[in-house]
Amino acid sequence: VQLQAYGGGLVQAGGFLRLSCAASGRSVGSYDMAWFRQAPGQVREFVSAIRRSSGSIYYTDSVKGRFTISRDYAKNTVDLQMNSLKPEDTAVYYCAAAVRGRLITSALALEREYDYWGQGTQVTVSS
Image (cartoon, rainbow, N blue to C red):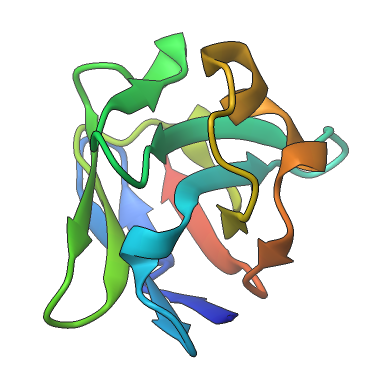
């Protein structure tokens, strides 16, 4: 599968953006899908994930209540709605797909569990 992330941009604090990850080759429902982000000078970190079968959703604590992950089967995308954005949300956002199923919850947050990655989209939040 090939992944392409888009939707990033420059927004003021308190604003919103919607990121999308378009998949080609297979349905987004065939994988556990996730968003990660990498801020300048920082390691890449987990943001959110959605399981392939149950649709269970997970978020890192810093985005709970502000970000929402969802799947759109018609568009074959995984989207990340980001509200109440903060300057600390500034990062390059990557989408990823994991082939191996039955990952334990903690494994969903690990980069090494994901086989396919999008190219990243820049999100900049100004104060």
